Length: 305
Image (cartoon, rainbow, N blue to C red; front, side, top):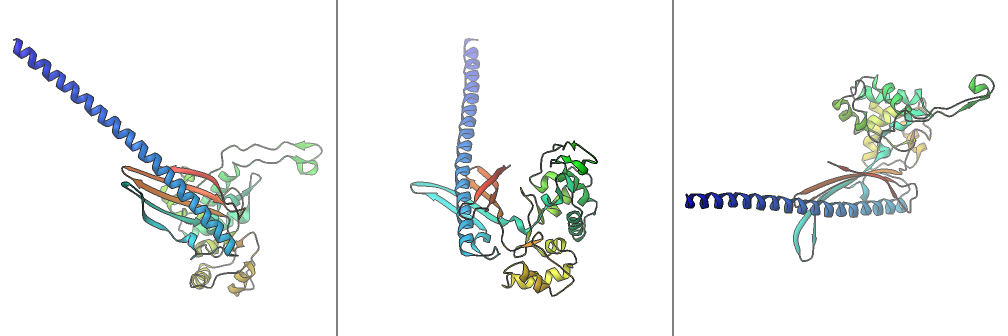
């Protein structure tokens, strides 16, 4: 009995020690993983600073924003090492011109949908095979995030003043936040994602970076076939110098283009980067404003799970 009791005690101690070692090993791995994630975040911050530098130099050297420059060249699986450390991190990233997309912020002003902009989004939806009812619904969602100014005098329908209305919903920051509205599911969001964006202000579309679908939607009377012909010549190296140059190349006097529709310089860019370091994989998206060409600033950044 004494021998059996001793064996039972030894077995129980062995089980307890094994459990302690396993918990300790799990805790060590958790600490190591968190350290790797912190280091990956710092590497991404370095990539973000590099993107700001590239955009600043591009603004200094070029009068227009166009594809084919350094900023538009993706970085794929770049190895990052430190002297004396055999660990390797992999970095990949890219910069996208957000003004090469249709800006959903254009859809409403002072809490009221803009019919011309709703029509532009309807044209884009039709080209993407999406129902046209999406455009007015998205416009109402954007309008709900804007305040309505107070009206005075005749604007208020008589004497005195009518109070404005505060926003009833937060402003969306990306097309992904549209999912859940009526008739907007995951497939619709996936179809819209390459062609639309949400920026902090209304913007024109950059004719040097926008796909044919966005140009055809942005400019009333411009067919998709015409837009594709123009973008093919553009991508072959015939970049647009200004808005008038774009309008002239359309060679169609029935089509008018103004500054609110087309531009050739961009100040809004999306930076996306991923760092893989040991067991940690961290992805970051950041919106950069180049309103001040000498000092591009990060408007917001978001870590993607």
